[in-house]
Length: 210
Image: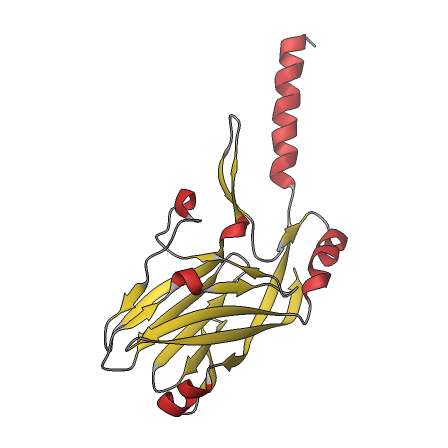
């Protein structure tokens, strides 16, 4: 076989083998375990409740008091939420005071939808939720964004939790430190010049390998 033809054949075989490679996937079952609020928030905005809803087989968690209704959808890539202002006053989400606390208890600055990667360490203006209005957004730690140089470089994101691997053994090793652990989102909500720090505590109650 001529060298050129042999090289082409090897490349075709290599891509064929790559196409046959399958990843094992970890499916996380997240749960909104509790919500911590300042004492004055309870006095002003009443009792809280946490409700589990399901849409298309996906669990979503709703926190609600007399101030806000927040629907949460944590994933391995980001923590998505929808917030409804139930009051007759505007609410500000103070992003520069918000935080993501990982399973090891380390606190991280966060970014949200619409923030450019290159601006992730700059001050972020508050998001204003008008009275009786709603917004959809997400929370993502800025530490999980980096720039890779080189010909095929660019901005990259590190997932919040490992979710794929070539072998079941490798994936089990990766996800084991996260089983039955908790992580938190601190969301400071300002209303009438008062900042209320809502801490949403999530539990990783199960991880399945597919």
